[in-house]
Length: 249
Image (tube, rainbow, N blue to C red; front, top):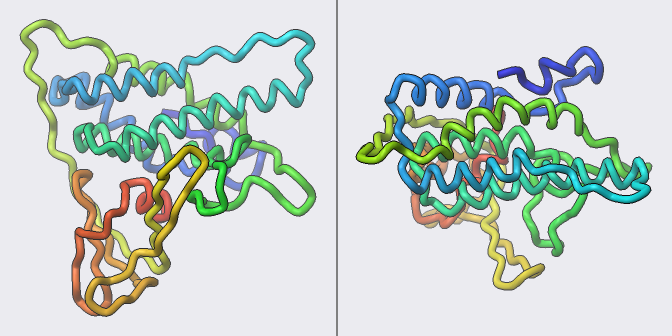
């Protein structure tokens, strides 16, 4: 898969999108599907269909649309794609390979987390650099994001396709990963539309909140290892609340 930074690197300088995980996971998913080693379960296909709907969504037709309106519509489509991927990732119903793929999609489209429509409360999660600068809105990397859509549409079309009658789902193993992270993890809640709560996660033994944590994940469970030696899986963090803060693995 051609990544956004590979396609547009010469034009914009620094790599605009974090697509290392996306390149890895899409290649792996295509191989597993082509060889029959992954036959998606219904939950995987349902999530893929929801993401596919966002990937292939047409832009709205507006009368006398201004350039600003068109730019906002393009970014809103990418933002809805990100939020749909995060919803299904954090719901915890998909298989590990599907979760790894959804997480990689979310990582790549992270610049649209709060642009053009930021979450509606100060406590809402924030990941990565802000989409705005002191001089006003920054220019979104829209073309880089849109360049990823065609091949993602092809992949998610396969994932969303109904299985042949009598086909038994088959889930391939996914390699667990481990990484060190120095910083805080925040657990978010949304008790009502536009209302967010946030709590910093601490070690249940020593109360430490900044690590450096040893993060271990098998795409079913995430554990956090504290420098004091205690490992906890009872932190309550969603996948996105951990994954989106880590380096581009």
